[in-house]
Image (cartoon, rainbow, N blue to C red; front, side, top):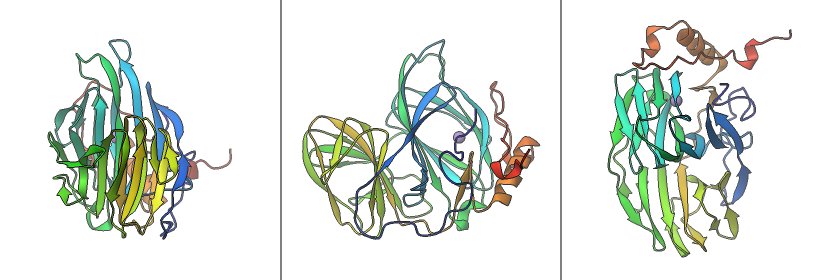
Length: 315
Ligand code: MN
C-alpha cells in the first residue's frame, strides 16, 4: 500500500500560506479514485489545486463496497502525527484500535475522533459478523502549532446533535452550525455537517469568516447554479453569510468549513507536518518501532513508513 497521501495528490513541499479565495465562488475540484487495500475511495482533499478547507486537510469518500468473509477492509497499524482523524459512516461497521488502548466499534450516526498530536498509531478492522455495504467518510483535520506537539487522544460520540434545514436535516459532526454545537473536539474554528436532503431548496446560514467545501455522498446537489456529484469538491471560498442548496431527488452531502488555516502544512503519507525533516523523523521513529507511537493490540501487520520522494535521489 502506498499512500494515503502521495505526490499524485499534492506537492511534497509545505503549502504557501493563504491560498484561499477571498470571495464567494463555486470552484469544482475533481477528486481521484484510488484504493486503500481492498477499499475503493474517492479522494477529494488534498488536491494540488486545493490543499485545505479551513483546517480540513484530507477527505476520502470510502465505498460503498460489499463486505463479506472474503473481502474485508482491514488496515493494519500505521502512525499519524499533527492531525485529528474524523471517521463517519453512512453504512457498515468498523472496529478502531489504537496505541492508547482504545477499542471502539463505530456504526452509522456515530463519530470517532482521534487526535495524533506528537504521535499515535491505529488500525481499522472489519467487525467479525458484519455483512453488507461499507460506505463513509474518512477525514483529517490539521492541528495548529498550539496542540500538534501535545499528547494523543481518542473520543467516540454515540450521539450527535441535529439541525433542520427546511428540505432536509443535518447532523453536526464537529464545530457549530446554526447555533447547534457538536461535543467533538476542535482545536481551530471549523464545522463539519452531514446533510440528508429531500427535493427542494433551502438557504443555509454560513459564516463570512469561514471558507467552505461541499462533498456529495449520494445524488446530486446544486449550490447556487453549480451542480456537484460524488467525487468532486465544491470549494465555496470566504465571504458568504448563506448559500442556497437545491436538490431534485434525495441526496446526501457533507459541508466542511473553517477559518482559513494559515500555517504552512506538508501532508505526506499519514503525517501532517510543517517540513520534510518532521516527516523524515516520524518515518524513522515508526520504522524503528519507537515508543513515540506506542503499540496497537491487533493481529494485523504494521504498515511500514515508505521512503519519501525527497529521500530517493537519482539512481
Ligand atoms: Mn489512519
